[in-house]
Amino acid sequence: TCKRLAESVGVRVPRGDVYDVDDILAADVMPRPYVVKPYNEGSSVGVRIVRENDNLPPIIKSDWNFSPKALVEEYIAGKELTVAVLDGKAQGVTEIRSATGFFDYEAKYRDERTELILPAPIAPDVYALALDYAERVYGILGCEGLARCDMRYDDSRGVNGLYFLEINTQPGLTAASIGPSQVVRNGMSFPALCAHLVETARCNKSAK
Image 1 (tube, rainbow, N blue to C red):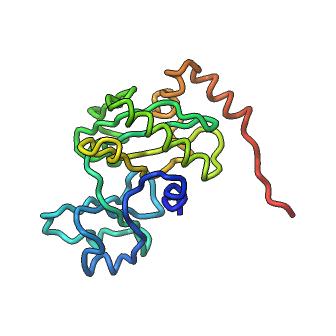
Image 2 (cartoon, rainbow, N blue to C red):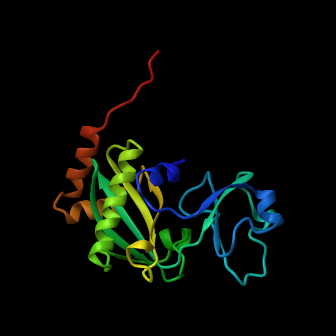
C-alpha cells in the first residue's frame, strides 16, 4: 500500500507484490534477482536476496519463522541511500556502505566497518531527486515529526536508477543515528531536536 501511494505521486519503486510462502517455495514468482522480505519484521530481519545463479531455494522453509506471506520485489543493484524528513522538510542524503555487501542486521548493529557518508557522494540531480522523493512519500502518507526514507540507487542509470524502498516512521533516535545526524548537520543540536519532537507531538484519539 505504501509503495502504491508513493507511485501515485510519481515516486519510482521496485516491482513487487505479496505472495504466499508456499508459492515462493514452489517456483520463482518473478525473474531473478529479487528480494524476499517478511512483511512484519524490521531491521532487515529475515530478508533474503535471491540471485540468478543461486542453487538454494529462495527461502528455507524450516528456517522461515515469520508470517505465511512475504513481500517479493526486484533487486536493485547499487548504493544504499537514506533521507531523513523533519516536519515535511528533507534533511539530507546519507550513503550507507556495508562491508558485507548487504546492509543486514549484523551490518546495522554489530559490524563496526559500516560507513555512513553524509552528504552522499552522488550527482546533484540524483541528490535533489532523493530529497524530493522523501518529501513526497512523507506527505502522501500524512507523516509528522521525524521519519526516514530508505532508497536504492543504481548509479549506472542516472536519475532513472533511484528507487524508494520504505519509510521508517520511528527511525533510530540516538545522536549517531542517521536521521538525527542529518538534522544536526543542518544546525539543530541533538537535545534541541529531542525537545522539538516532544513539544510538537500530538495524540490522535479516535472519536467515541
